Image (tube, rainbow, N blue to C red):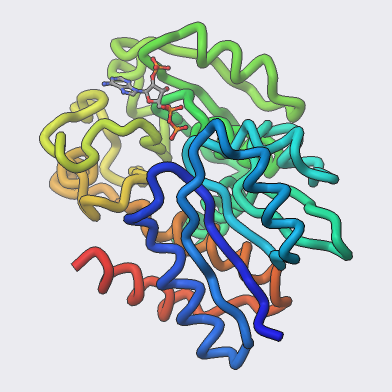
Length: 275
Ligand code: ATR
């Protein structure tokens, strides 16, 4: 019988995941379908019960359910538990097991551009859910320094304090970050600043950026945010959010099927959808 996969969220209509996974099922000859499902906050519990009742083989979770789904699952992967957010569920013998492939997807995409991150000083801009997944994953992987610059300093401090993996870290303000920007070899932009339709905004000045630094933005619409454009103009390397999106999907697909799919193919599907 055809296996059912899904993505649940609110809003969900513009998700790129169905096109990406349905293409992969076809390419790898897997008899399965991936369905976007609009689930409102107040219906999450019933939705998860329903997904289990009909034997859903796996699903992704997007905004606003990544945290609130946790108590509704049967089992949690330790990294997803530490992060406190789940983006991928696998039906393992009738039990819904939660994973987080956002951080590991980001890291895998990053490693295609940087051979090693162990001795890097990294600045994360933002302290929301995405920043948390990246911070925990990079802290677990081990880096030289991992600072956070966030509008609300207290949220950055809380994130650092809650991470079970120790790494030299500080929550720093925007002015301090701008002043010591040359200390960082990698900047990771995780806020919505620069996202369509507010494409002309910048989270901080890149005046002191080293030209051999890498600036990475998790936004992929637009593909080149203002911070990436400015970094490129200074001669720095840049990475947009397409890699993270595609790798988180690839890692989910691998958990469901045992197959690590073709990344370039996935990127092309998303690029076609973006138009
Ligand atoms: P996600 O879960 O997708 O990461 P989020 O939890 O809404 O999204 O987090 C967004 C992050 O971007 C937060 O750190 C937020 O800063 P605050 O902690 O101060 O709220 C940051 N952010 C959002 N809009 C911003 C803006 N206009 N200027 C500066 N920071 C902003």
